[in-house]
Image (cartoon, rainbow, N blue to C red; front, side, top):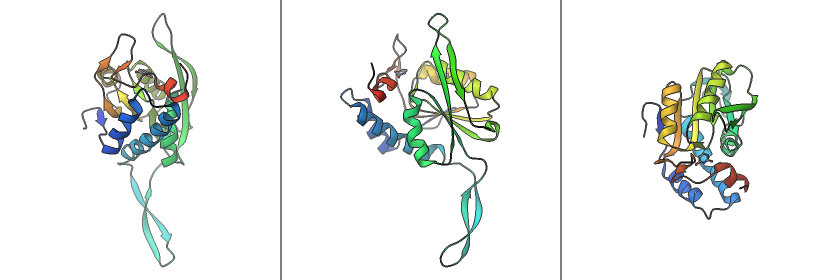
Length: 211
Ligand code: URA
């Protein structure tokens, strides 16, 4: 399903693995493995329109002009810490990508995201930036991370998550209408604590076995 700023990738393999990853009995090691696999499948979708040029090569039999990716290498930017669960699989599929990290925490008084770490690849303005966080919940961290990347010069940003809540999609649409959100599922709503329903719980805790 593709809407204005939202793409839901409903590939059967992704949907099947998503059911497994949502289950409360799924262990951390299974969760990590499934997230890696789903992120590889999502990466296939994210990169389907990358520009291709031709490169002169020689096969053992003859020279040929063969398709090759054009332009600067992608920048993958993980929102710490759960973003790292998505990063691993995407990086496996696009090993030459550059990698950045954004650390944000929520100020409990203002409820606004506060940055505690920011390191992104050079020439970010010339790269396609894939921003990664498994859960698009309220959308505040995602929107803040996009704003920060734009401050740094990024012009072409896609946001990739595993699950999105309608509330988060709306915030992204309102604050960053130029950023396509790519997700494996659009869930129903947020609960009063900001968790996605039906969701999968706390992605970071499930990835790393913390509580
Ligand atoms: N972050 C999570 O890890 N899970 C949610 O449901 C919402 C935000």
